[in-house]
Length: 535
Image (cartoon, rainbow, N blue to C red; front, top):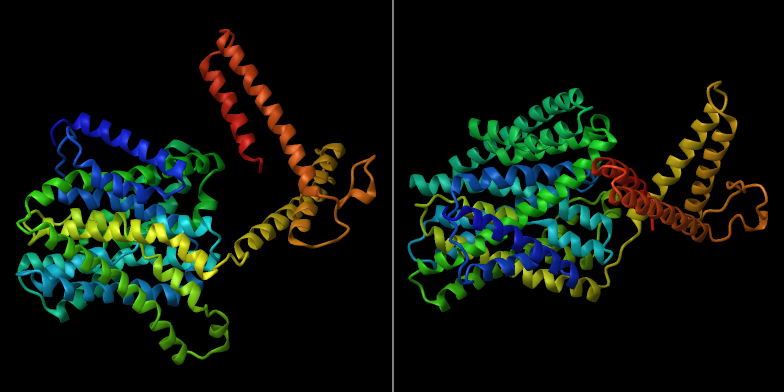
């Protein structure tokens, strides 16, 4: 890669600019990134970028998959296990098959293996933009969890199918029976490796729990620790990275300190953004070269891009509006009837099948001598553009038109957890009051704070009860009067006090009375206090 320093500078500036613009206009950044990436390659003076195909999956996928699995909900995965499994396996294979049929029929000389590789590339969904839109517009939490869970597992299904198809295309032969057995072996082997490595990583984290920086660095390595051995053994490194993330994420409350969590969240938020953004921009920068090598007309390329995009979108609409009715006819158990959703939420889920980083990485990882490689990369970009831009921009309209609204389950669970946590604190403080080393006034002051918190949460839930004990001099008749308003007023006072402290330590630094290192220590403490506020 020539002028690597210019490439790095351009990528960082472009990513920052597009990310800022996305926040200003209120559009999820993947949508703007794919548009910006397509345009960036045609800007005069932009340096040429040639990516090493073998490194694309290795660099980008393990951390992205580990992070997604780490923050997933095991409970939601279990609750939606059947839906997730059907979509992540059945829908992926259906999409890959239909795309393969369309591509094989319309692209002269394209082998079945190469056509199926294209289908596998564009079959996995990316939840980033879809869930960002759905969460902002108040879609039920169960629906969001199903979309996220599907995207977590279908990456593994799609990329196992992708590996089988690529091997068949390069080897020159394709046998359905052999491909099916390879698929099962790769999937189960990847899961087994991921589970074992995840357990080992939990032991590692337990021994480095006191070192925050080493812990965050180890979390970055965890995805690779699962991915690389699995790839070496010839099984799915993708599923291995996912299961490492699931195992470590499940045990993280026990093996990660609060300070390490703060560092880790900030680190991973930035890293995931950079990895996703870089992928989109890199593909866009390669687009001119991809088009130059094509001997097809612009009309033909556009027609193929529309065909494959319509096939991908149509496959999902077809599946999600037929298979659930088949399952309902088979499974008539009362508990399953209670979990059924109507056609409106299902249509929202069908329209949320946006493609993104995984499809990009898989397309770029095709070997240089792969049949019609440049065309397949171009068609992948067309699918990503169609789903992210067209479906992503129209998804808010679809949600509003169908009247799909948040059922409040997520908020209820959060309020319940907050109330139970406050109750646990009160009970423990009452127990501590009997200890010799505690001070009565200190315990009473803290218990009063938690009683107020418990009462405020109960008020938000809609419960009433004689829980809140007012301070001395407080009117008993007002003890249930707008507790949220009183809390917000108190938090405003706290924030004003924090700002006063922050201004003073800056003045001391500017006057040369304290060093910048002392400023940063105190500044971090004030920032942590500020983050605890709800306003």
